[in-house]
Length: 125
Image 1: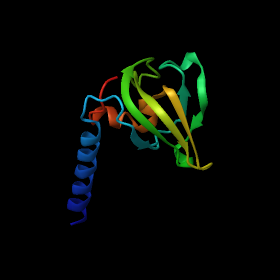
Image 2: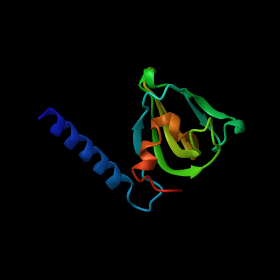
Image 3: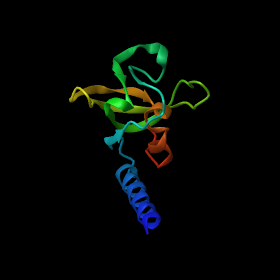
């Protein structure tokens, strides 16, 4: 029974993600908690790590999260892909602070959530 319940919960979560991001709107503002990818997440002005940081790094262990709108192809890092999320807000969980950005800043999808939102249908910018 636990397996069926866990499977149903995962399906509902995936469905909710698709409903949230299924429109063509770039203003999805999907809230994504960092997953334990083993990396800190830099917050950059452009989808390229050489273009300078807009804010301090985010960390899974601190309960940090991001609000993302869409994705683009950017710098490929460490053979893990080249998908970057347009990020409108970052939430520093340990400090209980949120910083918003206009225009959006960029976070490397494989470090945020293993690119799960991208694979679940987050729209391209």
